[in-house]
Image 1 (cartoon, rainbow, N blue to C red):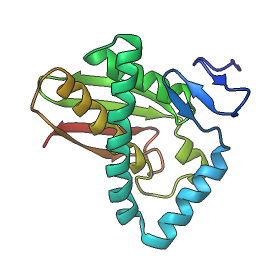
Image 2: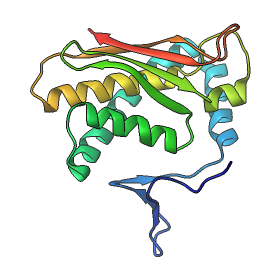
Image 3: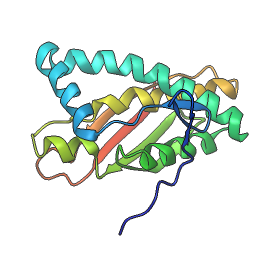
Length: 175
């Protein structure tokens, strides 16, 4: 079954800039993005690349959640739900919230149909580390907007790229 994109996409006829909701977007083939990801991983190693991506992803998720919350009048868990919906709609994979508790600073997210697993295959390791900073950044922005001093860390605990695993799992917990 195929469907048309479920998110709003606008293209500026003068500049060619694509916009979804409140933010400019880039539209690139999945293999292009993943091949760049693999190339950087080969040069500096997955562990170092994961550290860099965590920080950048954290900052980006915070910004995204802040802008989207303001645009759509969202707060609390609704912001995180919107974020998971948009990530899923943009082709990264299908993200579902298995548990979330803002007061405790915890959440558990399941990832099915990962774009990374489609390109890497079963490589016996966690490969979606790019997303970890996203979850902590999103949680922390939501917490900060609610006036909470609590801040979080996120990690991938399972990947469909590992033997015996059919989906990915990410957890977020207080620092």
